[in-house]
Amino acid sequence: MARIHIVLATYNAETYIREQIESLLNQTVTDFKIEVCDDGSSDRTIEIIKEYEKQDSRVTLHCNKTNIGYIHNFMQGILRSEAPYIMLCDQDDIWNPNKIEVTLAAMEKAEEKEKNVPVLVFTDAMNYDSETGKELGRFHASSHLDIKKVDTAHLFMENKCIGCTVMVNEKIKAFLQEIPGQVRVHDWWLALICSHFGKVVYVDEPTLLYRQHSGNIIGGEAYASYVRKRLGGLAAQKEALRETFRQGKAFLDLYRDKMTDAQREIAEHFAGMENAGWLRRRKDMIKYGFTKSGFVRNAGLFFLL
Image 1 (cartoon, one colour):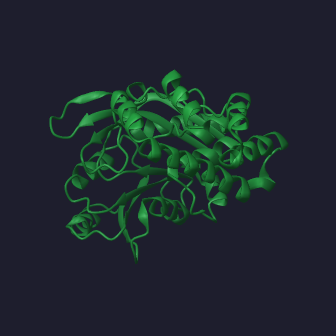
Image 2: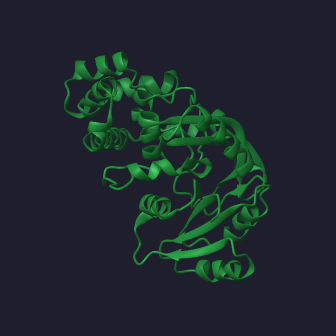
Image 3: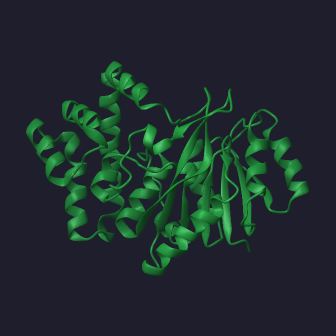
């Protein structure tokens, strides 16, 4: 059995999938299995993956019977894993040759201190222009995300993790037997689990080229673009905030009995924010630290609340 299970989620990936798989096969650590989890591609993705299956026994193909969406595609891939460690992989990035090596070292160091609990390790990434081949700067710096604040309160309000950089250990599987419909993004949910019941670790190093192109589901948009979109879409931002509160409530409902009293108090106040009064929402934001990264984001959040 391979030590590392790479869950590579695909959907109509023929344009970039070869470059991605080649970067995986050229890692400095070689004890891994790549499970390509295809979610109903209608292009040449499956044909290309079958070529790699014949060439390298580390590559396997799993085809979902129906299109289940990228959240469940990743989550089910994690649950199928029999390896001690699982890494998440998008279909269109390019991994640095030492990505597994760097991430695994951080995981093993964390596990020395945190025994028998779910651990999530995530790293930075280098934004990459697909058309010009130019590097566009590191993801967390360009996004102005504060990666030091990965406690439960901050993670309820804002996701810091880039899913394509994530490694989790097998202990996470015990917490994934039910995936509520309110989960907004798979990496966010995994981070919430590990911040509550284990450990979240950040490695301040880009481990992949994070390809930016028109087909990205979630891309590393520039901070100025982020601000413009928020200013221009007030209704959409309010709905996104409501969805975030509902995700928090679903988390509380599912894991209430596993939480400490302090964690339960934080989660209950976050889950109640959608229906709380104007003053209560803002007081809880400040008291419990339900904030985002930076003054601009938090000023907008205070207004939206």
